[in-house]
Amino acid sequence: MSKKVVIVDDSLYMRTLIKDALEEAGFEIVGQAADGETAVDMILESNPDIITLDNILPDMLGLDIIKALKAEGNNSKIVMVSAVGQQSVINAGIELGASDYIVKPFTPEKLRDVVEKAVAA
Image (cartoon, rainbow, N blue to C red; front, side):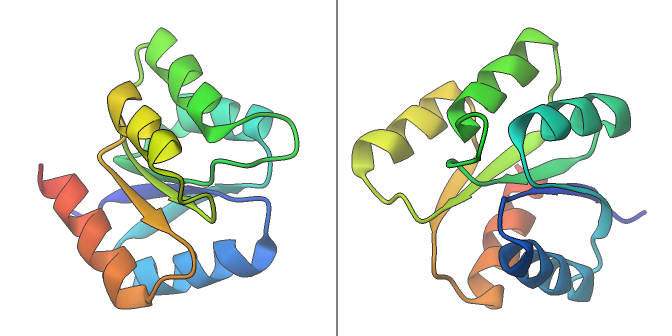
């Protein structure tokens, strides 16, 4: 059975890049969101196996989305995918429960490796 993924990024280009890379690896994309509010609703509704989560969104931070999901009891694995590469932000994401953190730009191979590792964990 393929693993379900929700992609959260305000950039259509990035969502498409992530979607193509993960579909090639056999993942099923069950939703895409460009802002935090839509993302939280979509994730709670579809309960995906894994979420790729940008940290800078128009209405909230990815870190706040992780907090909101945890508060709702959601246990989806989360891989942060962000252009923000400061160690403090990366550490905060991991401390809140993200499985991993990829800094943009990245290769499709790197994305697939990290997502597959997170799902297997």
